[in-house]
Image (cartoon, rainbow over all chains, first blue to last red; front, side):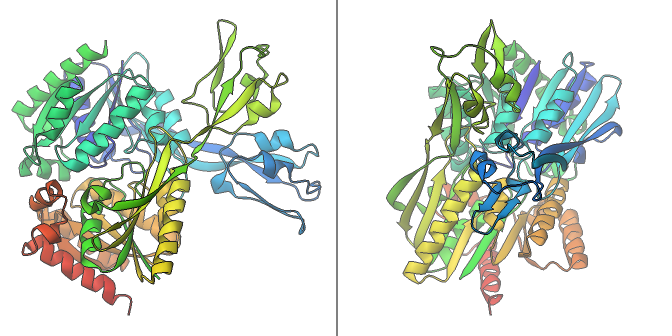
Amino acid sequence: MKIAIASGKGGTGKTFVSTNLFEVAQKTGIPVTLVDCDAEEPNVTEFIDGDVFYSRTITQKVPVINTEQCVFCGKCSDYCSYNAIVFVPGNRFIKVVEDLCHDCGACLVACRYGAITEERKLLGMVKSMYIGPHAEIIEARAEVGVYSPVPVIKKAIKEANSRYLTFFDSPPGISCPFIATVSQADFVVLVTEPTPFGLNDLKLSAETLREISIPFGVVVNRAGLGNREVYDWLDKNGIPLLAEIPFDREIARIYSQGRLLAEEDENYRRQFEELLRTIKKLAT
Amino acid sequence: MNEIIILSGKGGTGKTSLSAAFATLGKPVTVADCDVDAANLYLILQPENYFEKRFITGYKAVIDYDTCSACGLCIDYCRFEAIAYQNKKVILSEISCDGCKLCSRICPCQSIRMVASDKSRWYAGIYRNGFMVHARLAPGEENSGKLVNVVREHARKMAHEKGIETIIIDGPPGIGCPVISSVTGASKAIIVTEPSNSGFHDLKRILELTSNFKVRSYVVINKSDLNEDITEQITGWCAEMKIPVIGKIPFDKQFVGAMLQCKSIVEWAPGSEASKEIMKIWNSVNDLNQ
């Protein structure tokens, strides 16, 4: 079973919820994997760390143009949908902008003169960490300056053991990195906060998930801040409210130090266990 | 022209709340909301839009089954695993399709056409302290970086035409393509962080990015009293790296109170400690120009 923890807005508590769910699953003896899919800013290991037992670099192919063989016809530049090949016909100038390349291979097909080959470019790393006998963390981490973390995210998701309960800590937003993550899940937990920003972004994420037909429920974090509009909206749209976590400076403090609430507080441990049961019921 | 970008790496540290405060302190300014994925600044600034434009984020392949011979050549060529056989029929996954058009070019039956994704929009408008450009990326669409470029270019054009000196850019979270598009060519970056291990970790990554792009960066620690120890650590680390920390804003529930009233904190609670600190930060940001 694969569960993504996501939100349109950043900083609502995705990592907070996913690390605590992982913790209670592990302690209950459920074989579990947590995949940190926020490859631009991975934070799971700030909370749970283990020995890396497997690590691999993720690369993509980028074209290399051999200007000796190139006849400067410009067809590769025409074929490129990402403006990654700059071609100035008059000047016999042609250049690959590696950052814009999506590794689609169209330029290779376009070139009839064998002037294009490919080389590897580093995008990031995927690391698997041992946490317990049946518990592991997989971290996707993109290199700084890389445009798209999507290939790194996809690889990390593929590494997860399909027989384990798997959580994906999703990247924020509603564009490609988010889609690459949630589209692989059976159920999505959207974490929001009861503020106008939280609600606005929740609506966008909900709309996106409906479009790709993935079931979801909502956790309201920092309950007590803001107003009741989020609850009214959930009610009106028949979206399940999975849990509420109150706003509490002590929770913020525990979180800020990289500690797990479920480990520190018996009452919250039970609430996360309850949340896990609710999610498993809805996801099957 | 002075382009100030507000960034954070980690989400939820207070980029938009700080941008809103700047946008209501400076006059006149042009504001560009570059968090096109989850744009929120318009909720506070409530601009009156005088135009709305369509933005094509990319293309998706569509198969015409009347002519498709199910030869499967497209499956071999597609590097995004977007095409597969299902019961001897060639099926295309819209989610996986990257819009590279290669399948439509190599299809021997010419059965694949590319359809534009044109549901995203961008807007320009007037708000109480100046002009605002913002956008809405349609759910699940790509190329937010390109949309960011459109927003920024128009903000510059607008500022130029109206003779406005300052552009405030509310940036997206993360360090990927929309952030790179937002930060390229900015005059200075204000990085909003929070005193948590995650906030600190993400701060280092975003600073690495701004330094690669040669954009001078200044740090603001928001919610600084939620963990004084980590605030200390961040301050110490910044001093070592010679990155100025230009403000520490205490946690204040009135940020949410202001948001509920569609106001910035400096409009809603000008006398609060948080507002006073933000005014100090805004003044020092402007002093940095001289």
